Image (tube, rainbow, N blue to C red; front, side, top):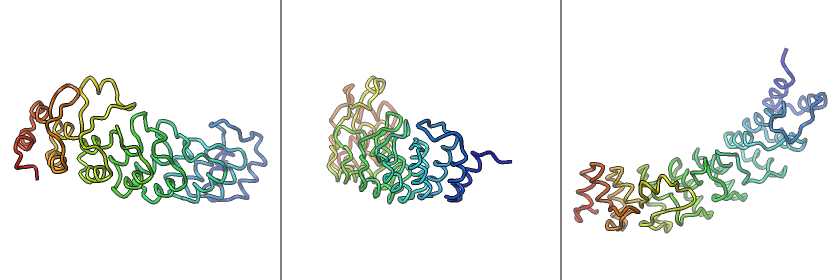
Length: 264
């Protein structure tokens, strides 16, 4: 015999409003602000399955918008579910804990149309961090397409003293390097911000060219030189890009940096 929780979850999965009403009427435990409410899983399931009618009904009957629900809604890619959440008073910039928020989940999964919808409905690309390390723009540079990242930049994603360009260099995202530079990111900037750890400072902070040289990414170094990177700039420990390439045994990068005729 199935439990009331199992019956409720099944009803939420099947979009059975009448069954949900019956179960809630018989349930002696009222929905509360406790995330571990025994029937809370039903809201998460409804969100993940794109059942916007159920989502709106449950939120109107005391169920809460937990991080699990936000993540589930993002997986569904249903703008109807997100609209139901907004109609029920949800703050589109609510944190989903260490994983970020609805926008960061959409960006990291390269859900371009959902990213566009969230931004157009007030999502702030600078509001929440993932694991206290990644901004939405950072996640986009690492995981997403240029189309998704373009949306973030058009909606005010911070690009000053930010890590996006050095991440693009580290991960070899030439498309992102060009996109960020086209949007005015300083090619020679050495970022040092709230997301910079002391351990990184001890190892030395550098710019995109320093990172590309250190990692031996010849294509990245070539791209940055073509775009005007200054190879004479030193990192926070007074090392040039050439120094870093030599230290890490990247001879091809050393030759590229030393040969001005190879900058194209």
